[in-house]
Length: 225
Image (cartoon, rainbow, N blue to C red):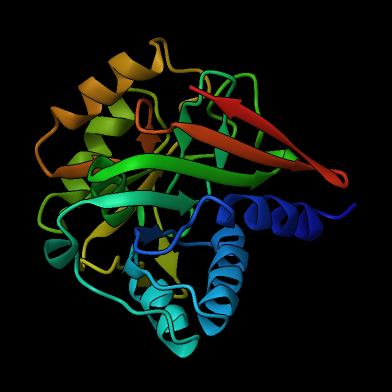
């Protein structure tokens, strides 16, 4: 079974948690794509929801499918959010941000009652960090932040979009760092990074996830908090 098929299987199972009248958070990325497609089909069949998108890309995709989009301020609180992850461990800790939407994703997750993560089997790990950890940074401070991260041994690299610096939906930079050999646990690392002025948010999602659905072969594996 290919990773694409595993993503589809996980996405379809997650969508069963979406019910009429819900406020729903729509994630960003290659796995979330299949979830949005499935919700769009259900909306065509009569499902009534209001959705909040975690990126401009997701908002555009959802609108094309006829999914009603509202702002987070209008929704106030979300019943369920379905999103992907770049890595997930057995403690339901995540690395996210490969698609550059980590700031909005974390804000949406914080304002959601039940967060579901969907992924193919390759995203399941015993230890976070083989995937580089994205940090969203204020452009004014990015170069100084990179120097400090270098002194911490995190091998920072500013993300590019061709020859230009990559920009998030909030017009910030992304710096990807190597945490595989970091001499601290994810919680301590998160706290240390967030204390550096100019780092807006990190791609460590350590406590927000309620349910993980992993597509593995032709079936799914489910992990609950």
